[in-house]
Length: 265
Image (cartoon, rainbow, N blue to C red; front, side, top):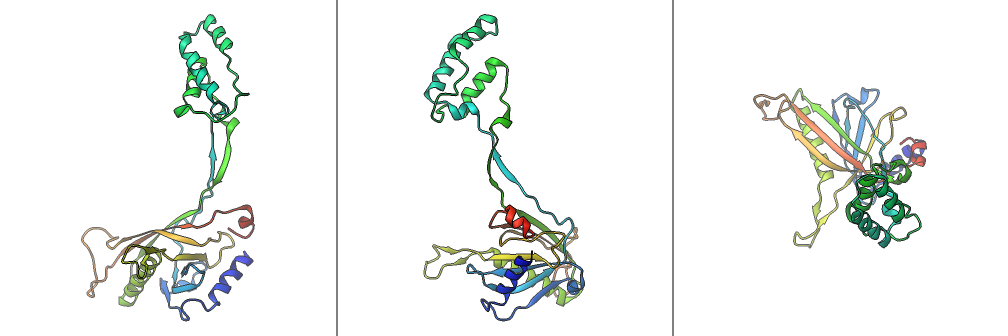
């Protein structure tokens, strides 16, 4: 965790990007809270740009680590042309389930473990045929293969009920800052044919010790409801909405490993 904090401090003090940051806070006394969330835009080279966003921690802060596994069939992994021949022979038997047919299956041979090559049989046809005629199914635990870890994704929902014009302006600027981070730009001289990648963001809790740290992320959705109270649309005299709901979804660029968890992720 100390290493993570040191890295963020170096980025903030590197002089890259804007030399002066405005702090957009909601509520306006959020820095008095024991804990809150801070979001900052980052350039492709790791510099900090734009304004600092500080928001209260919404209900149910959570993280999910998801491991991806595969369960390929032993039959499909170990059979080639021999498997195709085997299916055809089983079909020719006309299996009815009596003792003679069981002997025929034994004669054909159920063990294909010594054959080589990856199967050419579509949609698990060999395994399905064997299971159908023997009334057995494969134990999936036998072929459980680790693939990867999913990238962590987070969805936070914030409710804004500004009390005055100043708070309305802050909420408007927070939403704009997040949209700027999410959106691409037109590549200069490309005649609108190419887009530059959007910015990434750094996210952190003020006190992450009993929560977790975040890796560099991209914003996937900025969903804004300007009439969060429902019913007739409500607005102040300056036309600012009186109740706004923001749903923010972002995803980390890199997976979490054992080494990351030791550092607080």
